[in-house]
Image 1 (tube, rainbow, N blue to C red):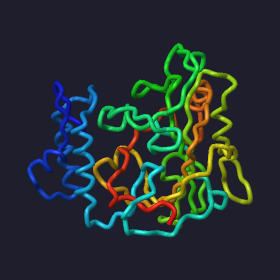
Image 2: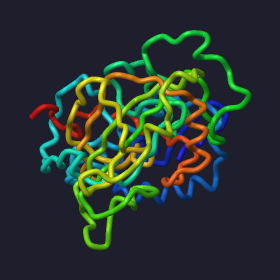
Image 3: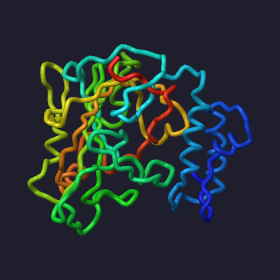
Length: 302
């Protein structure tokens, strides 16, 4: 939760930290719920102090609590000191695809997406990392209207990070993380195949509806057209993401495969996908702050 009055941005968590108190995650949630009733919606950019406060709160609420390594992270930095370990999930080709969604701007940093989008609103929008390459004026040509309705929608030049989520449970593709769980298995292994795209106004660019086509191969549900030419994926142990975990740890264990190179997607095909897909997605998701605390990061490559 973010309070914005004039140029002041405060969270309940940062107020608690300023007071030097020891807190538990549930207390912070209750405090923010009360403060939500007293404050307007976020309309201004978050300050560096706000983001530092969110990271400090995350450190406090996870310290000694047994959380495993978190995501997203800088995939070009391999260091980490989180001692919690879990067995890597199988190859995605041996698992069921259960969900596809994407975030506006890349949640991860590294490879060809290293340009910081800014702090955003402090609640996951307007932040993250953008494609660090160059686009032509034609690729950036404006549309009549943005694609999507929330938080300004999407325009040519925007970067998105697509998450192809896979589960060892006997499930089929559907909306939200709930589609990855089943009554028979509540703690399946999870793997996210990750591809970062930049949206362009170009009919010759990749078609997002093709990139998200699903079907069965060798008895399991698959995304049939995940790019295979965008570099060797960086694989590491982490968690689920999203701005809801900016100040608390995610309890889900996830094996990540993040491709370092960016591919171009025709933005018009994203609009087509939004108009009807089995995942009930119609807008981009927000971005969790990059996790930089070594205590919350695994070692890559070990």
